[in-house]
Length: 350
Image (cartoon, rainbow, N blue to C red):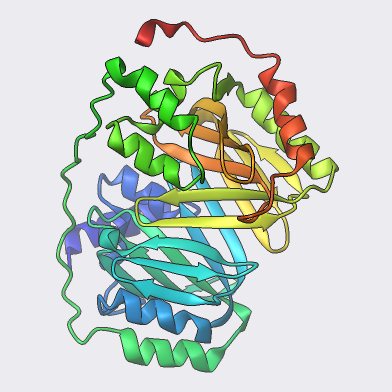
């Protein structure tokens, strides 16, 4: 345990008692996992790195709150883990409430955390990548299965409680973004048959996601403003329209399908504060927003894609749909209200 770091955090917590652990880690120039590890032996215990086994056990935890985030957005969904499956380094949890796409190669650390707060005892399982960044967290609720949580603790808390520091090396972006292949790339885009094939397409051409959208501007993609995004979410809320909101990081994508009702801006944060679903979006970290069309066997599928200043994907939104079913006409019409008012970008990047 890093006693010096532990003392620094205790001092910082006294000076700033409402500071969240992620912000405290930034303040102390360490990762969140490193900071959490200073409490190993008291309120924190390391988990065995048996991620597949743990995920298959989540169905026994009962009604919980699942949290997935990146630097700019937090996605919280209450419900029960259902239909969990693991296939090598990928896994799924497919339910009407908790809906996850999981990439286990980016999972490095797991913790069981039990904290005493003014509101009572908070229990959670928390998972981090090799850099100590949060991948996914599962919080107990008053409707969780107590026996399921106790069994998970017994089965997955590691006998070895030694913590190795995460890597601080930042991997360089691998994309070349060579513009000479743009015509062929756009031709291939026009022949997509499934939205999931888009990732393979950009990987084939070694393009970043946002470079691809810039290349397709005016054809398959249309840049819009933050105001447009928030106005669209307001309209979706008022129309009581079912949508899909995807938020992820390298190790996890979490999906909400349903309505968004209680929308509340608070400073730089734009929040959805519904009983079963919360979203917290840092609007000041948004660099660009695109409306994106992808051809499929079921017709055109339209998404909203939001990026930060490092071209990381913050979130995606779709109209509610399933494979084999066309997207909602209303969702398409709403997106077109903003497409029609956009101006073409200066294509000088090519």
